[in-house]
Image 1: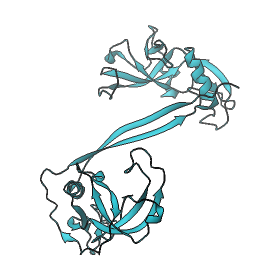
Image 2 (image 1 turned 60 degrees about the vertical axis):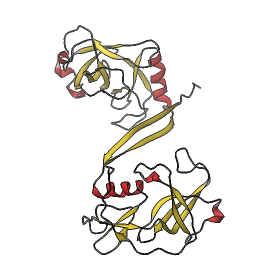
Image 3 (image 1 turned 90 degrees about the horizontal axis):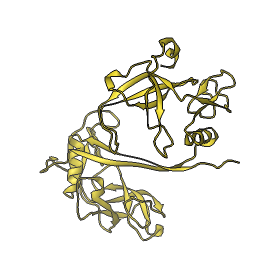
Length: 314
């Protein structure tokens, strides 16, 4: 049996968004140790606040201040906190209805164990020492025996230096196993050979192979060597530099129909000015030392392919 290939993969990017007046006031308020909600037309107070009533879809802007104390409405114990969660030690995820609010806020509750947590217990906000205008300005909730505070009070939502945008890092860590078809394809790439698999029903050759025909839905097993030369079917000129990419802009990214394949794959075109790349251009792969994939494709010097030879692969 051939070696089963696996590789750790990380998908990570910063998600940046601007804030409207309600969310801006809410996050700026957290920076100032003030918890704001919004009152709906029927008098309910929503915390965290939203800009539109979830039942009527009406725009709502009436901001109110609620207390930093509240009541646990439900909870779940987290015995093994993951990296970047609010607390490094076991804690409870809790929905807390702050005094003056009609909805509950989800956050961590610091408690010595699950026996110390119960629905109906009284808690209060524990603020972080340094606050920036984010939900993490609330470090967590902590048990606090107290009476219920009064109703929400009107608030203008005006603060000095308001928070107008947030950036949230998104990250997904996982282990990828390519399976039989792609493992064979990757092994061939290590030898600088491009391969696909032929469908036993429609006889089309797909690159890279997925183990099944995307058209017929039947399993594929016949490995076919394709290329290495191919034809540019469509392309675009990239003028925005990707973060951490060593490629200077502008450059051309194209769909390339490899000879013998029935599906175009993606590749970068180099060795030719961007304004000279065209549909039908004949290209070949350029490999770098130790690379598993072609670094880019360059013109072969052959005459352009006739449109009829690749029109079905656009």
